[in-house]
Length: 208
Length: 208
DNA sequence: TGTACATCAGTGAACGCGCGTTCACTGATGTAC
DNA sequence: TGTACATCAGTGAACGCGCGTTCACTGATGTAC
Image (cartoon, rainbow over all chains, first blue to last red; front, top):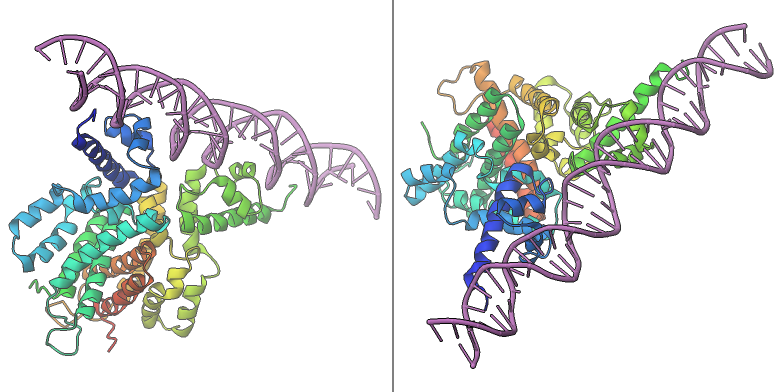
């Protein structure tokens, strides 16, 4: 074996890391293999000894976000202050709608920057996207507070919690997607900060 | 004058209509001028006697959605049944989160299909997008019901209504953007239908 | 009314460019002796 | 320990292709006489 076994895996990880970053900023189709390989410190030809084609990279780069060893800056700050399980979901909500997250385009959640790109893509890419959504919705669903909308006060069924979690994810992702698309910083901030208290209320984590 | 004055305007409108449709389905950069002009029944060369370049088309195609004479199918059904002003906003919410709207990719609100494309674009394109957002948020803000979160019961200030409207738009757009990106029809439907009752509650339009 | 004309919307070949992908090759590596 | 070798990760020129844009030309139109 001319190269150690870890070498190929390490290079592959470096390509995925560059792809994740550049995809987040520019979308799946706007960035070229040349640019990704250049960012990873390689040339284009090497790409095809790691991936069969560009499309295969889409799904892998998206799931690479949730497999990453070191969380991005916008996450780590919030998660460090809220180590307990119940408040972990709340900390994720806080971090997700933070200004740090809005500004960290390259390190942000791929659901924000790749939403419409994924909608136009196929199979494996959509499956990877669904995995990220399921992870976020799952954390929210498992830590739901009382449902202010439910008729009865006692614990609602898990299906309803899942629905509530999806509505919460929709508001978080939607707020961030819109904030990124709006060039008026005041409105972008309003989208972010307005979503927060209503998200907290929706989740039943009383803020007041 | 070799051609009537309306002729140029009519052709221009036809190009914008084709562009709006094809952009909605494929994004701003994935569709070529050839394809747009072909859809409008013309050849590529004619494009440049109507627009200076492709980028100029982006903004015009987006604002063309709110200037359109005949509303898309997913809108007209809901709006016909709710002609009064207070319930107009509610009808728009219903229509926006309807299955008709989810499936009508070409005729849908451009905020859904172009969100991340616009985030990567510049000046005029972002301004057009902001215009669509402002229109939707404005209609919601002007027809807000009582705020369940506010401490006092009496009418809250217009700034707070605007904030609430933005959170509502975020949930509607976010729900639809995610539903389009998810290939599991059950989850896509959950995103759409879960956002609805919480949107109604958020707006203070009691549903129960 | 009929004909010649000026206008300009629309055509389509051509341009330079960057893309995804291929492939013959180079050269750094661990192994065998 | 030192040298020859087999392996294969990485290189970079080349390919066909479609893109946005340009431009000399065509031909349908309303107008002037």
